[in-house]
Image (cartoon, rainbow, N blue to C red; front, side, top):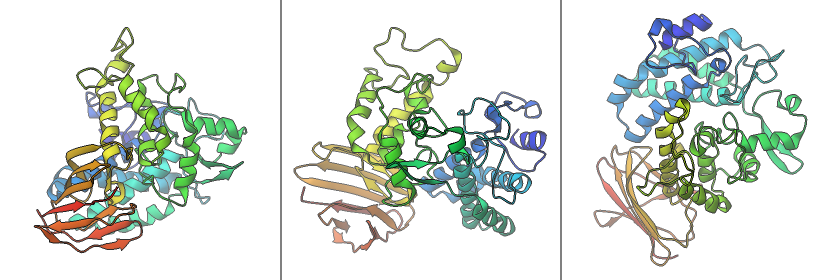
Amino acid sequence: MFKHLAQQIFGLEGLYVDLGTTPFTPADRAVSYATFGRALSHAGWNSQLLYQHYEFTNDADWLRDNAYTYLSGVADFYANYMDKYQGKDNVIYPSMLLEDTDWWTKGFPEGKNVLTDLILFKKAFESAIHASEILKVDADKRKRWQKMLKRVPEVEYGWKEGKGWFGIYKDWQNVWPDFDEYINHLQTSRWGCSGWLVFPGEHIAGDEQSGLAPAVRDALAGTDLLNLPSKTRQLGTFHGESNFLPFIRMGIMEKYDDLRTLLLYHRFASGQFSPFATGEDVLIRSSTVKSWRIVENQYFPILGIAEMLLQSQGGTIRLFPYWPMHQSASFDDFRARGGFMVSASWNPASGMTAKITSLSGNTCSIRWERDETPVIKHNGKPVSFSRKGRDIVFKTTPKAEYELTTSKK
């Protein structure tokens, strides 16, 4: 189906995923959604999900058997698309922000160097390049993907009137001449903008101290999570709010209570979550489009809570990165990128303990910005580690278990 769509719609080789694609459509009858179908980010988004499975498991057999055909096919499509549509001015168009552009207008002012494309073109190329290196295949294709990766324009960002901003497309200042209105759009749009750079795009990890991240962090800090416009919440609170997880990854702790309120407000007594407030008369609305998204909405809160306790984007483990330090917490057997299984507990009186099992023997990197120096042991013996920027780094062996402890607050 994806191959058919790439050829039928664009006349290109490779794999393309349209917004309207469903698994129940015969492959040769798949069609494009006329407007939103030109949002090119879906193909790369799926690439990212598949490659992340490898990042967490380090299962090269799974990568080869279940993911690589797709990863390479999407990278081929994006490369072919850039060859056909990217001009000498380095602009990629036409395209659309994912469900954030209502219609085409003359000159495509909202369709050039679209944010979601810049993010996920890069991610798709990076995933295919890394996968081909791991599997030792497609060296010639890899060179082309590397060349195309360098041609993807950078996301524009900066500061204006003391406020951080980032560009959702090339001509945003013409489309949004009122800067305050534009900032409000970044803070409250359902898709396409908000925290896409952090999640699900992972263009930035979120906790960087310089560059693009501080501008994004500042732009989103003004979001009132408890009073978002209805369009943001139309498919359920945790489907539409692309800034829910970015707040967690960016460490904006002043919003912790608001996120906690949202989580509790949408929680069933069973522990499951509802897309809509559980105090409403109708818990699951009858509209088909809202009903089939129920599972999707239930998982976002669970993911959010998990990432309050453990994060590993960029391959660096973060223990309790978004947790109030005056409260105790613990978790067991969470996976982290790089092939690690992690359990940890935090107590403000006694400190932190963590158990990190290395599944593949990769080097372990832990973000460590606390005052106290941790102790790391393997089989009761101290393990040496080095400091690398804000992280502590140590070598591991496959299937080995490492214990980290601190004793001070």
